[in-house]
Image (cartoon, rainbow, N blue to C red; front, side, top):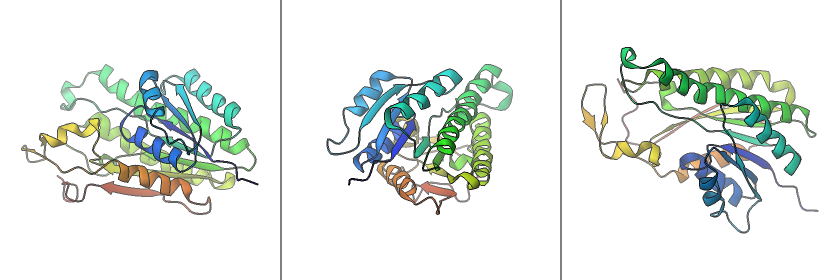
Length: 252
């Protein structure tokens, strides 16, 4: 009898890290749900799926909308019967500015996506994982090296990523009775559109602009697959994955 494929939801799956992770999980045999707001880009990503991999479901979702998130997880449960992995990946970065120049609207927008969106997705994943049989599953939060050391002029983004560290620790603790594991991957300079400015020069703590090295995003996708494949009695609580020569250690 063939083992049933594991099921994974990936938010922010239309591009960058989310897309790479979704395709890597799918090629390894996972049934994957690609979730994001931009359906056309999700469909383009799905078209790159491995023919011999798992099934692919494209699902429009706004992670800041509770009803939209609930629909995503209910649709997944109805389509596949369970949920084994959530890659809680959707996030945004604000334009760099000192705190006295940041509008409240800009602050609220990044908090809504990076904190509230991750909370809503984790909450719905938790409900499914706690109720299903066999019980349990794994939530992988996309953190950031900014959860440890900030870049200049990054108050909103850095604040939200510190909050995700608290979410990860709390879920990891509270998930023990239900076989729900929670991990956080803090990524530095994966080569995506999100980090394109690293190639032309980005502000450093000393006020200078510097080109920073980047790493292939497939390394991040491989790391997500590694964590996803662990048995539930083992967990990577935190992982820092970065371009070897990026200025992180000693930053600031």
